[in-house]
Length: 344
Image (tube, rainbow, N blue to C red; front, side, top):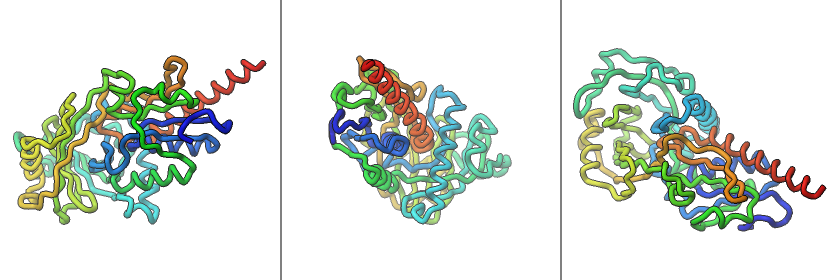
């Protein structure tokens, strides 16, 4: 079951078990129930890039990815999260409806205004009520959206995948050619794509955050300027951030970043002063000029790429999974057609 080409079933290998890999594998299994889908990964939850993230819904660091695609993927994902939130599973899986303020966001109104709930441009007086380490905020948007905490819902998705008949193999893949037994290979390797497929356009965007205990806080505040901070409540802690350091592979928390995060977080939300510090965490967002979601013939191997989502993996995963699974289906149909013709 960990190799392709057996038992006459169509076989698909997925590389990566983060939010992108898991959601894509689930969609493939749902779209093609008879297929054999195997995820290969060296890391599973709670050790993926998504696991340390606050899980706030919001398009962020997606480069030049066409806005129409970003919004379409975001809408499909917001709908998926909303359906889960409405179910009895929602709360235990870390899905929360939250009030959110985004400061100095551009453009106004944002292209995603119809995806979230009740977007309102706040007054100058309201904007001025939020502090900042240096200078002031330009504008503000208020709306309701979701936090979806990956550390809580990724294990649910892993179980959903295996319940559908999927298989997860703990194995690092160094070359996609190792998976040539499979009919189609799906590359959801995130930042690993730089080494796996030699994509020099992919450069990590280092994100350091701090978790604090401040149970009185329930509202998210994000400063969208380049040197901005954010405060995002999760169910069991508060995530204060953050950084987006370009082409920086260092996964060890740095004191200077912790100092900036704490000071900036307290400027935004003064009640954080004196709150208990829980831990610091660093994740490497898969930064790229634009998301890579496309098919490729790699020396005879049929590959679907789905990576490079920057800081928006949790915001776009379901829409991208749906598009990637359609490409897998196309590749399998073409393969079957070629095999049929070769027999004639």
